[in-house]
Image 1 (cartoon, rainbow, N blue to C red):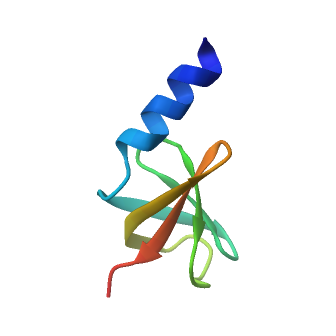
Image 2 (tube, rainbow, N blue to C red):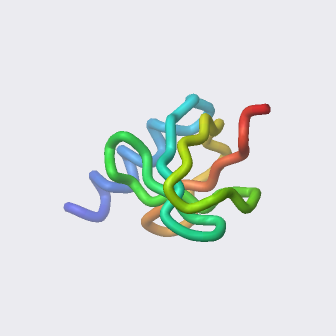
Length: 66
């Protein structure tokens, strides 16, 4: 049941803009502490606005909003 709820929450983010704190190359976390695989490399510690483009397992995929 927990995995099903997580999937539902992740899918509810599709197509939405989220602010992400970059943790390391290509990976960050949203304001809801959800892991995001980024489509670009940004400096660790930086903030970025992304558009959620997909769900990959237990994390989101996102594209940088230019």
